Length: 133
Length: 330
Image (tube, rainbow over all chains, first blue to last red; front, side):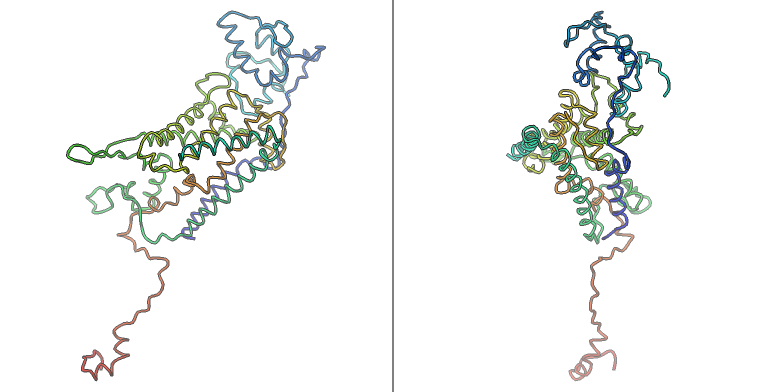
């Protein structure tokens, strides 16, 4: 091979870059995080039920929170009627969501950190105080 | 016709993944086997292609000279467009790889009154190519969030910059939108400009449609059909740690996306996309124009049998004397 040294160095860099995740994750297991719902408020509930079904919340909570913000701030409408059971809730991240899910680190952050999502909720809202684990 | 065939091929690929996953239940094939095979084909294919190029001798200096070559000290040399040193070549290559210097030139030809041939500036291909390649690169880097755990810190910065418009939930990533726009522009350019259409082959349209399909399915997954990202990451992390698993409830769009990406990667070593390795190995770019300073010897030169006059005379001296031909040595 002509200029073999340079070409081989280039190929090693190429393979290294494209297999970087394999080396980076070596020895780890592919465990997905499970958000924790073990909080005093949730444990008090007879039927553990969020404002909508778990599956729906998992897929759509971010859009719902976005709509809630617009509804409260722009229209002054604070009432949310659940489409699951018709119950009424007050649209409030700090007073409704976080009242039950008072464990931001074990609930919100678990998946957000795993999927590298940075919601900008907390640039305005105050995150609940939690004991350091 | 070439374009339509390519479109049909890409649509067929998406359909294969759709039917395979939603009707035949071949999640393992499309989620595990195909990506592994594609990665192996990609790596081995690129290496063997590059090694094959590396074994081809380039005995002479054949750089494209795009400026004044090195001459007298009082003539200004175009150091990067006509480099005569290794350093100049490195700068030239960096400009080529990162900024597509060779497309930033007067590439528009016109016959004007006279008739006179006029060259003028047309930077649209350069701009479109730059937008396309850089956004593709950023999108590729952003995908590392699905392949690393914990996610390296610099990805947060990239995502924050990329999504700084904060439009919609989940936030619009500028790179995704620009990528789709740029690839569409590159396609329209091929279709709408007659002389470019004339030289366009199926091998030109197919990668464009494939990348369009990848970008569209990715955007659909993020903004419209909403794939379960934690499940997806579980699958990709399983692949990266060689403990593949198939989490429940991943939508079929993800498998279509993954199959198109796998096809793209496996296709690279056999196609024009090999320019990702070829750009470094193109002798018209990576050689210094130093033919006047350095003697370059052809590597396959065999020893030439030289028969000197002295030897000739030794062989025929007597005969030459008899014939009356003058000899140098008696």
